Amino acid sequence: MSASVFFFLLFTLSIISEFIFFSPKFIFYVPLSASISFALIVIVSILSGIVISLSIYRIRMMGTGVRKSGSGLLGSIIGAGAGACSCGSIGFAIISAFGAVGGMATAFLTNYEIPLRLGSIAILAYTYYVTVKGITAQCKITK
Image 1 (cartoon, rainbow, N blue to C red):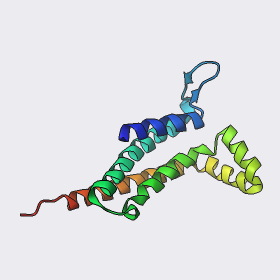
Image 2: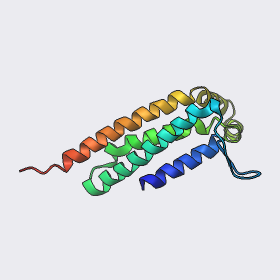
Image 3: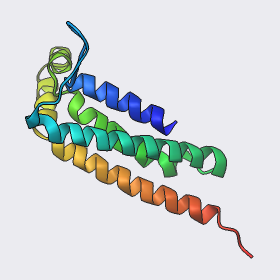
Image 4: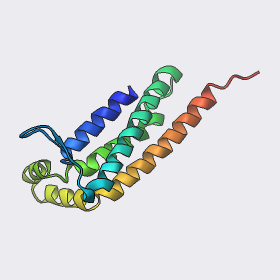
């Protein structure tokens, strides 16, 4: 499950951030100026895959509520949404649909894409730590 979430997020965010092109043929290209952004996409995808699968395991097997595992989903959404609105086609659709508010949101996400992704990495790392700590505490065998 972790690998499927990773590949889905990486592929989707790479298309949205314009690293993968389908026309006139399939091209994967990361310009040198966008290498930091691509590296952050890879890190967010890896952490999201791990955290989401651990959260689902914790909910299903341990019987904990969604409330304790919800911050992992929040970090994944922030990381995915940080660069989604900054690209051309989606940004224009948001601006045309929401007017001035959409334009301001697109400008904000374009300007603060890297800090938002770094924040989502911090949220995902903290959620991973808390989830692993919770699973090991619940699975301890007492003598």
